[in-house]
Length: 229
Image (cartoon, rainbow, N blue to C red; front, side):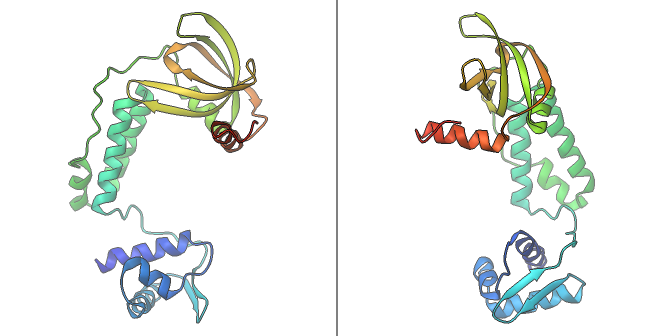
């Protein structure tokens, strides 16, 4: 229990944007400040570069790396639940990526913790058949990551064909289908494109005129009736 708290103290200090006092840490872990003093002293004794100043708080020195993959049981269960949700809802390539990630985690986990991940009791079954896509979504994921425009040949719900150049914002995974949220140059507005209605997809070399996070914020504001990109 204490070892887990020591690792979590390091994580809290790493995430913090300002010094954290012993009182703040004590409240987070539901222990006394005296316990935090002892824990920090133990960490410093093992070489963790924590600096402290009375009345200011503790700061973790830059460049310190945590021991890898110190997951607790609930975190491992959450990871496996996420992988199972991906397998149930995502395209085949993304499902394989999730399976590969879990396999890599298993390889480096302590032997006594592997069963906590592989035998996790949390599931996310899908009761709707998964709709198959006509296009490979890996280039679309790359376009989202690289923030590049995409050219689509698309069919609407009535089967009418159209071509669109879009600014991809996010890819949503729903039960049975997937959908791209994007700014459509043809409509000068945000549109949602189901991936199973895409006949072809070409990632362009043209970068997005606005960052994805800016577009996503604009979409959220538009949904609330607050603005327009």
